[in-house]
Length: 182
Image 1 (cartoon, helix red, strand yellow):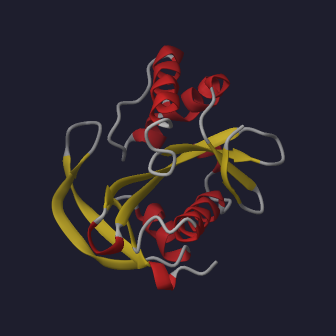
Image 2 (cartoon, rainbow, N blue to C red):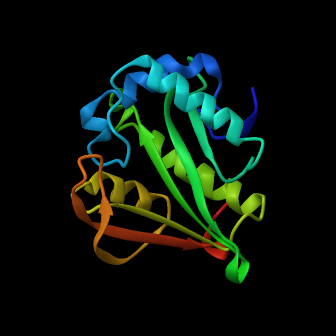
């Protein structure tokens, strides 16, 4: 198991081939994927292929990538966190995003995973600015980002496209390196 970081209740690590059932469990839930860019998974093969792609991508980029979020108490993958879109200008900036199994939402796991990701980014000196966005209709995601210490910057009009190919307004949040509390 290649761990990236740990929090009180979570282990965030590279995906493993055996995780496909947990990935399929939440990626096949239309309530979970309605605000996301990828289509709702229709079968376990899609989950297997996604994990295989991610495992290969770790060779190229061990820090800027998508990682499994697993609970410590039962070793279940309950979601993922993505650190992406690295821009090296001015000390670097990255974009983060996350997905969480509906059965685990509302328990602080997303906030814990995001705070852990921010500390991971700072601790590894990956970027001086971290951004995150969400569909303005997904207010729960905005609450997670605020609890993690990120600041709301504004609305990007029709800047997002979901898995239904619908354009939507995007709420933009950010945090700077010096604002991240380890």
